[in-house]
Amino acid sequence: MKFVDEATIRVEAGDGGSGCVSFRREKFIPRGGPDGGDGGDGGNVVLIADANLNTLVDFRHRRGFRAEGGRSGRGRNMTGRSGEDLLVRVPLGTRVRDEETRESIGELLRESERLLVAQGGFHGIGNARFRSSTNRAPRQATPGTPGERRRLHLELILLADVGLLGFPNAGKSSLIRKVSGARPKVADYPFTTLHPNLGVVRLGNGRSFVVADIPGVIKGAAAGAGLGIRFLKHLARTGLLLHLVDIAPQGDLVDPAQQVRELERELAVYGGDLVRKERWLVLNKRDLLDPVDFERRRTMILERLGWTGPAFGISAVTGEGTGKLTQALMRYLEQERREATTTPDRAPENEEDWHPLA
Image (cartoon, rainbow, N blue to C red; front, side, top):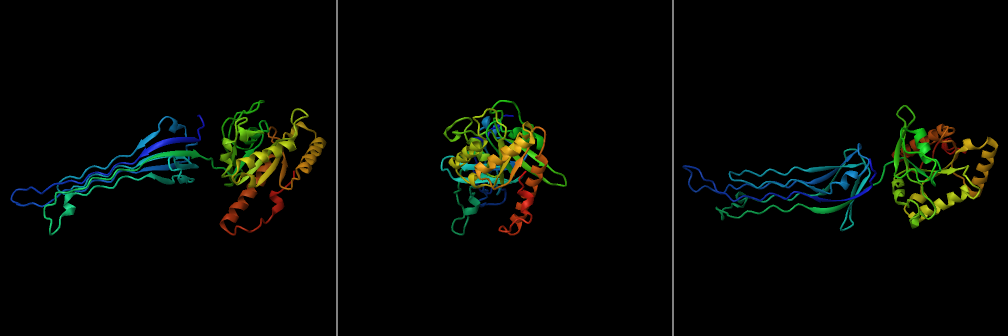
C-alpha cells in the first residue's frame, strides 16, 4: 500500500430542515390551530481514529465528504428527521488543520477517538411554536441553517516510542527487521527505505514498544538534498531517538563522527524539539570488525564527539548486541511511563541500567 502522510479534503455538514406552516384541519373541529412541526438538525462530519489504518492514501481518491441534511417538518406537529452523522475514519496520529484559516482543529491519538470537524445546521422552527395569546394563527416558520463547510488539511504523524535516525545504509531497516515483526526492504544501495515503517518490539509479559524507521537523512537535506527532511516530522512524538552510525563505512573518506555532527545540524535546521530529544548512539556493523579494531574505532568516535550519553555496539545482521539494546530501551521507556504518572522530576532509580556503554 502506498504511504501518504498528507491530504486535503472538503467536508460539508448537513443543512438543517425547514420548519412547516400548517393548520389543523379535522372534521367537527372548527378553527383548528397551527400544527406545523420543526425541521430536523443536519448531520455532523466527524473524524474517528482507526488503528487498522496507517496511511492517508484513501483521501487521494475521495476528497469530498458530505453529511445528510435534516428533513423538513410536517403538519400534525411532526418533526423532521435529523440527518445522520458522517463518520470518516483516519489513522491514529492524524493532525487536522483548517486549510483556509490555518487554524489547528485537533488531532486523534487514541483508538476510536472522535473529532467534530463540521457542525450540522440547526433545525428550522414550525409555525406551531409561534402561537401565542395575541397570535392565534401564525403563518411564519424559519428555514434551517446551513451546515459548516470546510477545507481540511490532514497530516499523519506516526505514533512511536523510539525513532531510528541515521544516514542511508546505516542499517536502520535491518535493525527494525531483526528486533520486530516489520519487514521493510533491505538492499545494498542508498535510500532503500522510501517511506516510514513501524515495528512492534515484544519482550514478553506484556512488555513492548513501537519503533519508527524513516528514510535516511543526508547532508543538505534541509536544502532539498536526497529525500529531504519531510519525514522527520514522524519522529516528533517519539520519546527517544536512536542515532545509528555505520562503524565500518566503505572508503576512508567517510567519517562516522562527522556524519553524527552533520545530522545534528540538520535536526537544528528542521527546528522543533527533535534536536533536544533524548538520543542514544548505536554503532552498527560491528560484525565487520574484529573485537580489537571495533573497540579502537568506538573509543575514537566517542572521544571525537565528546559523547557522554548511552552508546551501544550492535550488528543488525547477526543480532549481536540487539538484545541488550532492546532491554535497555524497555527499561528506559518503563521508567519514563512511571514518572509520567507520578512525580515528573524524580530521577531514575537505576541509571546505569539504561545508560550502558557497550
